[in-house]
Amino acid sequence: MNNCNLCLIHQLNSFKTLSKKELDFISEHKTIKHFKKGDLILEEGKPSRYVYCLMSGKGKLSKYNPSGKEQIIRFVKSGNLIGYRSVFNEEPITLNLTAIEDVTACIIPKDVYKKLLSNKDFTLEMLRLLSNDLKLANMTIAQLAQHSVKERMAETLLHLEDIFGTDREGNININLSREELANIIGTASESVIRILSSFKKENIIFSKAKKIKLLKKDRLYNIAEGLEV
Image (tube, rainbow, N blue to C red; front, side):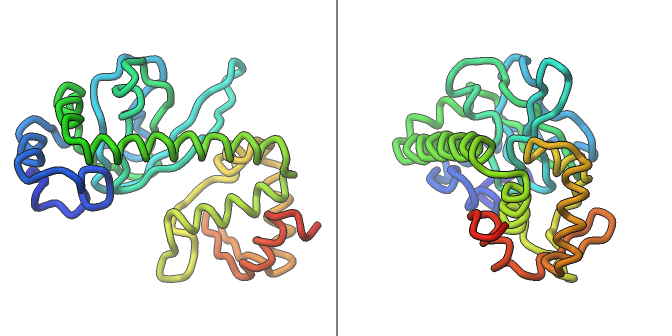
């Protein structure tokens, strides 16, 4: 949608603090682009020139270590803003953004984004967003350092359902390969397959192909908290 004032997506992020005039200003300068599943939308190390507002679809933010192994940092969905931190800090892009299903995004030039920062309410919302990013990063570091692979798997399944909800059949509304799940929790694919098989055998989850349904969330909460081995 070209007119940001008529788009409900802006109510899901920091743009909700902007005036009609400011939203019209974005509408005049933004472009809308469609990405296919698997497309690299942002590439680590490239110059930061835009802020992306996801209108539809889902993506993953990730980094690669020196040996080429991917570490998935977090997932994004419609309503999320991407690239603001690099623009805010005047630094190159720090993460890769890959579409994990078809994505449509509004692309906002950084000069346009920076002019919006004269709105104090908008700036405050962006600072809250940056603060939350730091909080999530700290939680991820602690999770990797202190939790077992089984605990991280349980926590990740609960987190994915919390972010993406469920489809009509009750499955987590995102399709991820076992390798992608391994890249989230920092382990080998074989470990993910073994743990999911164990969860399925205990009737904690139901899984088929890339679909996973959480059947006993109380068990998953206990495992994630280390209350159940």
